[in-house]
Length: 294
Length: 240
Image (cartoon, rainbow over all chains, first blue to last red; front, side, top):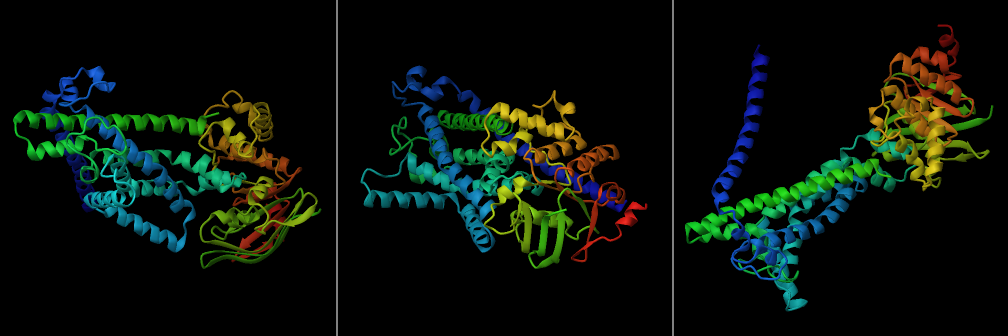
C-alpha cells in the first residue's frame, strides 16, 4: 500500500508539473494575444505605406513594424546559417572522432560557452566591432552581420550538444550495420548516422531558431536600433522585433504605443511559429529523402 | 579441406578487461563451424575479430593475427594495411537482432552496392533479385520491394539481412545467434538456408541451442574461460 501511495503521489506531482508548465505557457501566449490582437492591423506592419509597395521595398515604411520583421528574419537566418554548419561539424567531431582527454576538454569548453549570459556575448560582439572599426575599416560598426554572428555563437553550444547526443544515441546495432557491409566511416555517417539522428538534430535547430528570434541582449549591443528602416546591407544597422518590444516596454509614452508593443510581441510569436513550421516541413522532406530517396 | 580462416594467438580486451587470450584455431573451406559456450564469454567478439568490426567499438583492443585465404592465398587481414571495407565485403556478418536499415526492402539490399558506386538501375535490380532468391525471401516480398523493411516480420527481416550480406558474394559468413530472436518455424527456414550456404562458402555460427548445433554443425568450438577448444564431444550433440 505504501508503495502504491508513493507511486500515486509521484504521478500527481509529475502530472501537476507538466500541467503547470503548459498552463504557464498558455497564460503567457493568451495574455499576449488578448493584449496584442486589437493592435494587429495592416497598419501595425506597414503604417501608412501601401502594403505591396512596402513588401517590394519601393516605398520606405516609417511608422510600421515591417522593417523589424524583415530585420528579425534576416538576423535569424544569418545566425542559423552561421551556426548550423559549424554546430553540425563540431557535433560530428565530438561524437565520432574526438576521444579521451580531447573530448572531455572540448565538452567542458562547450558547456562553459553555453553558460555565458547573452549580454556578455553582446559585449564581445561590441568589442569585436570596435576592433574591426579600428583595424580593418572605419565603415564597420555594429551591424546586421555582426548580430547574426554573435547570435550564432549564442546558440552554437546547444546545436553542438544536440548533434552530439543525437549521434551518440544511435544504437550500436544500427551503427555497425553499414560498417559490417563494407561502408567507410564517412559513408556510415552520411548514409546512416546522420539520417537516423535527423529528427533530434532538427529539434536542436528549431530550438536554436527560437532562441535567435527572441534574444535581445545580443542584438542590443551589436546592431539593432529603433529606427533604421529596411535592412539595406549586411554592414548596416537594422530593426528587430525583440528590440522594439524591449524599447517600447521600457519607454512607452501612450497606451497606444504599449498596445503596439503587445502587437509586436504577437507578431514575434507568429514569426517564430512560422519559422518553426518551415523547419518542420524541411525536416519531414529531408527525412523522407534521406531514407527513401532514389 | 584447406584452411579458410586461421586465428593465431588472438587476444581481446575491452579497456583493461580481457575477454579471451591466445586463441589459436583453424576453420576450413565449405565447413559450418558452430561456436558455443556460456553467455558473456566473447563469442560475438570472436566473430568481430574475423571481420575487424571490433575496431569500431571504443576501448576495444585485439592482439594476434587473423589469416584468411583470399584469391587462393592466406592473407593477414588483421594487419591495418589490409583495408577493412574490402575485408567486410568478403567476410559478411549477420547479427543476433535483425538490423534492417531504416529504408525500403530494395534499398536495404542495394545499399552496400550503392556505396561501392553502383548506379545502374538494372544491375541493382538483378543484384537484389539474386540475393533475395538466395535467402528464400523473393516470393514473399516481390510485390512490396518499396515498403519499409522494418514492416517485415522478424524472420523475414533476418532473411533480408542475410540476403543483404550474401548480395556481396562473400567467401565467409559470420552469424551471431541468427535465430535466437525468432520462432521455431522461422528459425528452421534460416537453418536450412545455412546448410545450403556452406556448400559454397565458409560459415561461422554462434549458437546457444543444442538442437541447432546438432542439426547444423560440422565442427563445434567451445569458448569458455577465455579459451577456445575444439569440442571433441561433437558426438555428444549427435547422440541426443
